[in-house]
Image (cartoon, rainbow over all chains, first blue to last red; front, top):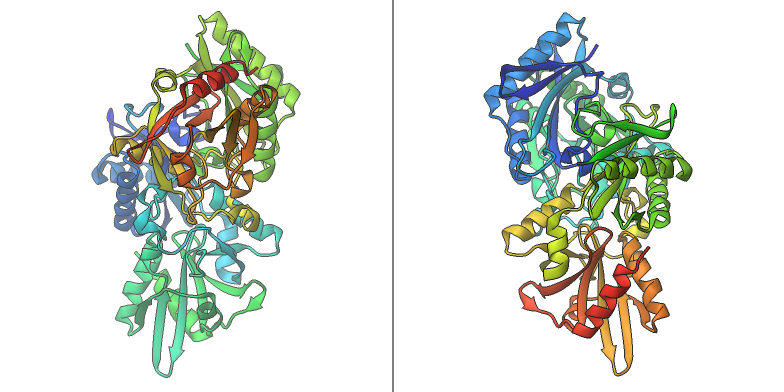
Length: 291
Length: 291
């Protein structure tokens, strides 16, 4: 049902392993300290989407954390092995390919690196269709933190996601399904596992806006791909600083991510948002066309 | 050399396992999301120090993260089994007992819980004797964050320590050995793996001060034990809001933690601090007396 491949110098194509068996020592610092990095990609129609962008972001995350990881070529070989194994075992219409790096048990030890492939969760596919209700939650950081505090690892996708998961649980306990983080100075940031996108219709002009990276958010690979496609279809593109008012005044707000894709936001803090059906249809097509 | 015991309903005293063998699935959310909690205790002279306080803090951390964990009795049995195995294999003068909880591979699954015992790192023992140089680094949060943003898990000891580890690496690259975090509004918080303590001598009065918990720091079990002991020896006790000036003007500054114990700070941002030898000797005795 799911596949696992370790990157291992002794196995050029990666080492297949049993995902249901114990595989990691309890002493790995990815386990004991959340000290590692990861990526999640969508595998559908026999292709892993945006592999280049994800491998590039993984390399940046690793560098930010002083982790030495195998080169792109070895990751691609391991991914090939993993998806082939997954397909041989039945496959799925949509699958998640995860790339994970854990610091070793000691700093001198090589990082542990692996790839998993598993069916995409039904919940995400449902939410993509039905849309979601979202809470605005304070991330605690101000919007200038990234430049003055590199040790906070802003913009790196680390394994230390406990706060992201706690924010999602908080939303679920309060009648919502997801979260948009804001900075302590009131700037719109990102979702715990997604990027914020908003659209404005202004006469014949269609504008797509996302928070600017300088706020310390993760560079969204899906946002970036949608922006590239939208530009070709005549959309204007913009980069915030965005305020919550901008979300309430938009003609559509979406959370975008690699596996759940373009997911419309119906309400923020229980206040209904506009969703321009034509803009949504057009962006859905753009999102579906990502390769 | 090191021991590992899993908490397992089928083994009332805990299940001994090989710490050098793979033991965890790559899908456990403690691995993929840093979604779990932990404690580190000192085992020396045939006793695990402050076990009650650590088990209490583990329970609070777990509750903060909505993790259901076994009761204290089962943890104590597993700890007994682990230290007995460690001692049978040669033991060590000082050892670290780690309690770890990882959320399972799915939310419905039981949390994975284990105990490890390993020799205390030589580096910490050396630093306790030699003292350390420290950098002040901005933690990015303001000092009021804990009360308004429970989803940030302030005061819970989670496995998501990537930022703590990055801050320590940043210090090491800049000629220091450790860090004291400050809030974005300039209040002294804590070390990445320790609590800040400062002493003031005022005529015949000896005063011990630590940052107040309302700033969102972790409640220090060692700080608390030293405070209890110091009070009996006539020290006045105080709880900050502390500013960096308070550290520079103190008669001694220490980072305290369960394994490294009372570690004097020689410089902060390369500025030398006072260290009253008599106060240091007295606090070292108090620290050594913790049971």
